[in-house]
Length: 458
Image (cartoon, rainbow, N blue to C red; front, side, top):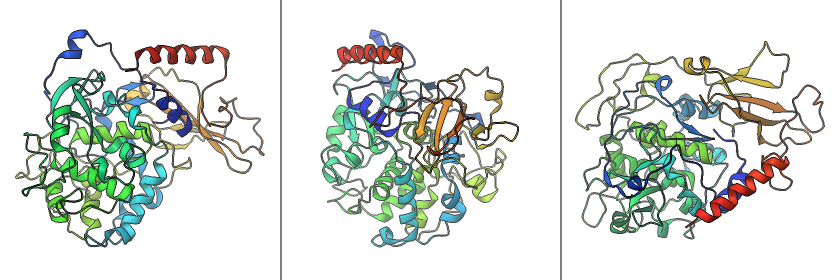
């Protein structure tokens, strides 16, 4: 769910804006370090997920090492038109060296680049880990990536935890902490000493490589999927061997097999998408890793999309074990429509959007509701522009109920069109595309917030 335009969020993050946490942390919480206790969510389908929102941010709702057997509702909405699995899976892949020239690589890259509408800044990411690295919606704590230790989410200048470049910064295309070396998707909160231990060593199992499982956590697959994200999204093809980032294609595929996607990864994909607009396609559809390198997808491979892709049912809520096969425990949910949404592809909503034929306003787009949302007494935020209109093209604005996450969209008529039947929208700030209202009270409130935050900055 995105309400800030790229310019607005970039300005806020550059100014050191820290999104509000869900709860106030005590002094004891700020210093306590324990091993994270992960309780399985038990979720077997997307409709069961309980989301926690803070403004427009989404907390990671998942649990570590719990197999994920469904694609989240935000993931389902991400893949439309030519980007649905049935179409992309028919595209050709390549070898470990020729994959970047393949049709599948190019299509996956186009999808992730097109939806990546907000590029995070390196400094700005430190205030976002309370959402992306938490477990089961508890934003007061974060789980250290390599160790699984539990820490306060409050940033303390890297004394306890800092930011690990899964794709080492020295091997990024941009080594100055911008673009790929500042991408929230592949920056993980990690215990400071373990970050130092990893250094810029390539992942692998042989001598001279860094094995992310060495501390007892099962995260080889997590690492493989993030490496693939950077490889495709940013086009960094310097991937294989000790001088790069991954021992070999064979090791990467093996890690994908032995460590299936867990709900923590899926929850993090939702949380990152809320900030940047894009997702890691190899989490939602790990099958793409195999197809990209012309490898066969294992018949017993547990993936989030398997139930819908095959029409079978798969077991959920189980801990990860590479030696076990999936068992049937729940019926697959009905297949989602693969048709294009009429709204902009860069917008995200909390339901599958369609025109409300009962509405007299043909600009309004209603959102289908979950049972929880139907029971909610909605209190919507103000409208925010997500796509500015032009002389010939319509724009789009959205509003969200922070109580349940339901989103409504409304088209903004082209500047040369008739806008008599549209509610007055909140204009963007001239020259930057920000979607903050220009009321005097709003300006004073923002000024007060930034002064307060300035005092709190490290």
